[in-house]
Image 1 (tube, rainbow, N blue to C red):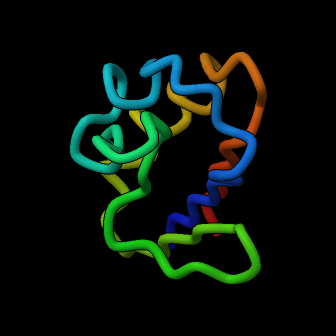
Image 2 (cartoon, helix red, strand yellow):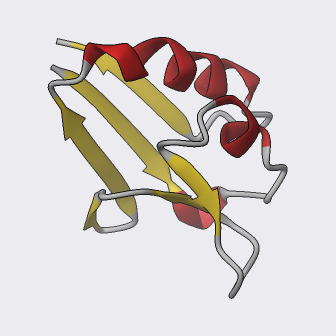
Image 3 (cartoon, helix red, strand yellow):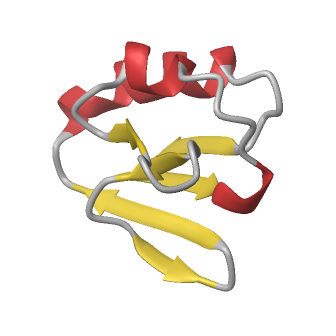
Length: 76
């Protein structure tokens, strides 16, 4: 299972995550911050759990490119 977490309130809107993993991330038109699609919000931590291991590489690249390091990706 792939687990992706986004601390949305710390997002600076750089758009790297959307460029590298467009199927999992998009930018909000309301506030210009990243949105992790289909994620559950728990106290500002948006988490997506997926059995699709094909998303791991793109999301891992997005996490590494994030300048504020608010994306984590785990393969469990």
